[in-house]
Length: 203
Length: 189
Image (cartoon, rainbow over all chains, first blue to last red; front, side, top):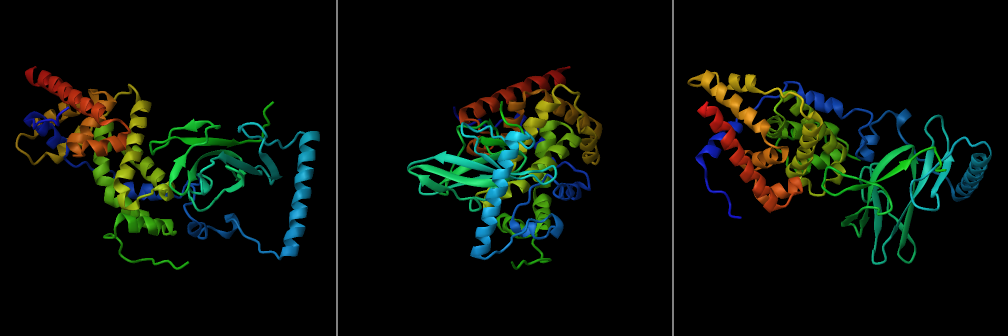
C-alpha cells in the first residue's frame, strides 16, 4: 500500500491536534511522590541502601565452620518445618509449577513467610541462563542459573508470598518465557510468566 | 559506591539519567518526567479525551517505566520505550472507561485560542474535532495520532503498538475517512 499523499484536510486536523495541552501544575510532584509508594519495587541495591536500616535486607558474614553449623541448623529447621506441615497443617507452601512441588519452606516470620522457589528451565544449547523478574528488579546479573545436568538449568530463590512476573534470559540476550507456567501480557510486547507463591498446597 | 549529586543534569542524555537513577539517584527521574510530560501528555489527552484520565495514564506510565527501568535494554532510546508503555496504558484506560461519558478538553483549547481571530468559532471547531476523534475506534484513533500528530513512521508505530505495518496503514486510512465524514457532517449541518 503506498504512503498517504498529502491531504490538506487531514493536515489541518493534525495541526489542530498538535497544539500543546497543559497538565496540572503539580503533575511532576505527584509522579515523584508515587515512586515512593510501597509497591514500587526498588531498582537497585544502591537505592536499597538508602532505605531505613530497619526495613533493609542485610548480609551476615560467617567463617566456613560457622557456615557449616548454620547450614546444619537450617536443614534442621527445614526438616522440622516439613514435619510440621504434615502434622499440624499450618504453614503450607505450594507452587503452581509442574510436578515435584519445588517450593521449600524456610521460615515463617509473622505473616510473611519466606519461601524458596526453584526455577527450572531446559535448554540444551544454552551457554548461560538467568532468571529475571519482579523479585530481582529484572536484573539479568542478579540470579544466574546452574546447569545441574545436560540442558537442565535451575536456581533457587527465596521469595515472599505473592505473585511474581518473570522471564528467562538465554546467553544474556534472548528472553523467553516459562512454557509450564501461566502468562500475562507485559508493557513491552512479549508476555511474562507468572509464579504464585502461596500458603496453600494444591489438593 | 560513589554518587554524584546536586549537579545540573537537565542537559544530560536519557541514557545518562537512566544510569543515574539505576545507581540510586531516584530524584534524577524528575528530569525524565519534566522532559517528556508535555509531548506525551498531549498524546494521552488526545487518546483519552480527558485531561484527568490522561494525567492518570501518564503518571501510571511513568511509575511503570521507573519500576522497570532496569529492563530498558537501550536507555539511549528511552523515549520510544516509554511511549510503548504509555500507549499500552492509554489503551487499557480507554477500555476500562468503556462507554462512560467523555469529558472533552475544549475549555483548555478555548483558553489557548482566546487570542485568535473568531475564538468562538475556533473553539467550536476544536470541540467538534475532539468529539469526532473520540468517536473513532480506539485502534484507529491510536494509529491516526501516532501517524499524523506524533509524526511517527510506520516502523516505529509497529514497534510501539505491536501491530503490523499493513494493518496500521489500513487503520490510518480508515481513521482519515471517518474523520472526514464526521467533520463534513458537522460543517454541512
